[in-house]
Length: 62
Image 1 (cartoon, rainbow, N blue to C red):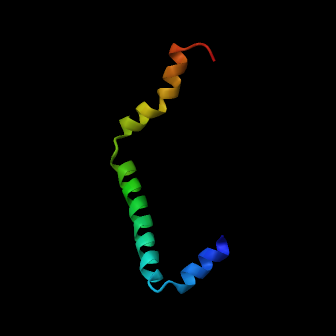
Image 2 (cartoon, rainbow, N blue to C red):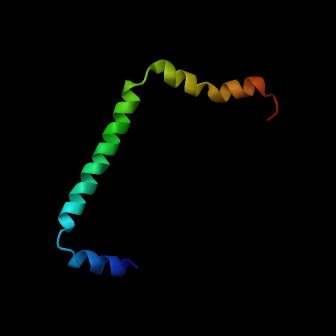
């Protein structure tokens, strides 16, 4: 299977454009994730971090 893919991509003429598109999409994905994390309020993360503790308070069965 891997040798088939190697041969296929060796014969592909426009492989450079695919590599460029994947590289750009990879960086865009991580930039979007980092922006999402940095724009959220600290209270949002405090609330999320206390969720497991809230379940333990109300449910004493483990």
